[in-house]
Image (cartoon, rainbow, N blue to C red):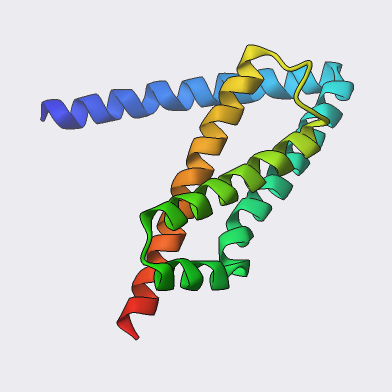
Length: 134
């Protein structure tokens, strides 16, 4: 019973927070339309970068097969480092370079690069297991 009361109250609190935040965002962007353009530009660049990150290891599947044939941890590490480095280069090209970014941007970039590295690892592990199976 205590759990259901907590879920009910928590749901109401979260709904209230979302409604207030949504109304605040609508009012803010209604009064500052130039900020809306900046957000859409940022979202566009993030989607382009995410598309690149998602497609790169699948488009270069032959590299994974070459690394599996080498049976070398150094080759696998070099492949993952190369993928992550390519992801970082594309991100910095979309940002317009390395200079002039604040600490929040650098934190987001670091989290993005770590996520891209883990994604590359999982995709390459999947491809390697498929190659070893048959």
